[in-house]
Image (cartoon, rainbow, N blue to C red; front, side, top):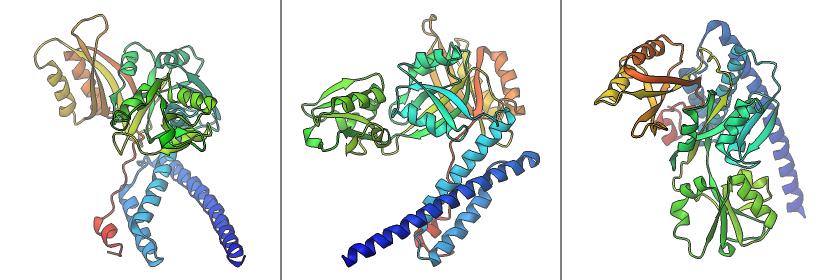
Length: 397
């Protein structure tokens, strides 16, 4: 009994501390937005990595005196800094595009609640609006149609995955749509086998899944014996099916976070081919956005070149000579023109920058066609490096 009373008291103290931490995190987030507001007139970049490094070093040294591990502090504050940067970016974008009073928005995505597209939509727009009007779709083409027709303000489209590669259907749709890319998001993908409560891995004989997660988990799935696979239009549809059937021999490939929405639990975690598995999503809208000068930007465009030796090399040299870094090059066939290809290119540049405008002028002279798909802030936040000696030794330098 004594141990029980002591344990309950300790848990109560932990709960109080956790609630205090939440208030502190909220207060820190509010202060970070004040920092963004101060950068409007001074036109300073959102990130100051020298200050971030100095902050992390100081925190690690202070934490060492309190008996806290350097890795623990670094991991915790990397997440806090990323949240701060992304919230500042979202605020600056809302301001420059006159969207600061917006409280709701409608988003079309693949599948229903629990799908990776659903999770990506909530993660991206939770920084921008209070309420998301969810529009689940059964195909990528339907997402495009919903936005083009005005039924949804935005569409969330997966464009590539670190395990299964590019999603060609989405690239092909971008050839013909009038929509603009206005944002991007990289979403961690942590595939699990999910089933109803009380099930076990040994009991599973049927797995429901979408084709993409199946490919991304092929190394784990292919050696399985006597397993039947049922393919669905989306991960959400697969989870919904398993939840409705409510049988311990059925499982679905999905995220633990999405499974919670259907009362499903993981019977096997970390089944993806790659330990670090991420999907990149793009956000599309009817109207292009202007990117605040303080933010790192990407521009995506399509280019088709003449059918002659060295044509693509000449185009890429234009980017190199204008000091523009290319982050993605994808070729796709031009529909209706056999053996001809278009090239999708992502570059780290603001569309309205001097270098990018100069590059486009030069490309127009050598390319058959150029189509700008969008300019948007990049949301891939690289962690601020910390001196390794500080991490290895866990002592002040």
